[in-house]
Image (cartoon, rainbow, N blue to C red; front, side, top):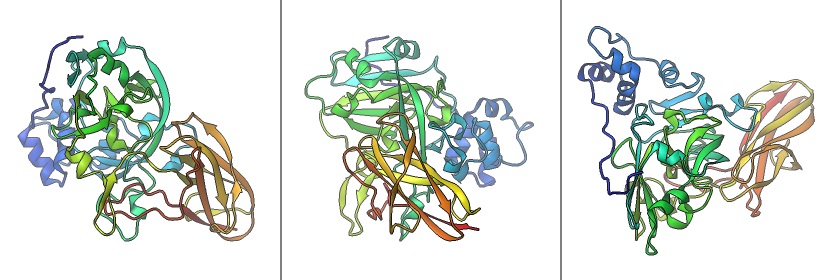
Length: 400
């Protein structure tokens, strides 16, 4: 650990003009080109003789970054996970969704990683990966959800990637409480927010209130499900703010700057804010609301008459899920489901409900209630950016 002010971020990989031009001509956007060129394979093959004639397909790109090709490609830097691919408490690393506001950074090595703690602290600190791992370690099972998850369900449509129920996952995270790092530097009493800096691009900054930053569950993590944190999901080290929209959990975090005011950066005051249908800015996006989604059976499925099971997941950024109910008649009546898997207050839960299916058309629904008594609404509040869609999700099926 070096106790001195450091302002320089890790250098970014230089673009190889020839390959960039070929990928651009093939229709790839600049962020994904940067990600491809940043990979070790790209570095080895980025010569005129070795450059492939065709750009990789989304499935090929997913495989190249260690992801399952069954993920849904929305954009070159956004890949969703169909929830029906999961039936356990945690999502396998290769299936966990990918969401980036810039390039998918894959070349920041643990030995080169540094974390600089600056601003209103007693002593500015620079930490290596080894320094970080020397602090008291812990694990936490928690869900992580993109603020725009399920945006495609809003009517009328809003701007932004039209996610299905696919930008959500649950994992066991390993690392250290952020408060342990802040204590090394000594936060001054006048501190208001901690601004995290991502290594993917200079403007990737997000302010977090000091009290939230000091919550023991707010962590710097380098493990995911007992393995090295995947690079597409923020490795070698990312911030984890359980319960909050994913934008708060800065990937590839390399800086923490303590300030005496509310941070007014783009991702706090422009991009991730709730705007009503009248154009009024109400609030920034923080905790994710209580929500549930049926994953079995899937929408439009045909199932056999007789004994069937409705199953899915429920979560809340405000606390533990207390109950989940299921309706077999489009919400006319409800029955309590059984929570079969539960990883704690920060985790999602899996629920199941057995039923004797009769032939005909059936509209399945689920609704969750958390420990605060907050219940999933019939319809989510429409907002101009399509955030926090938690309306009850209906799954029409046919029984025969």
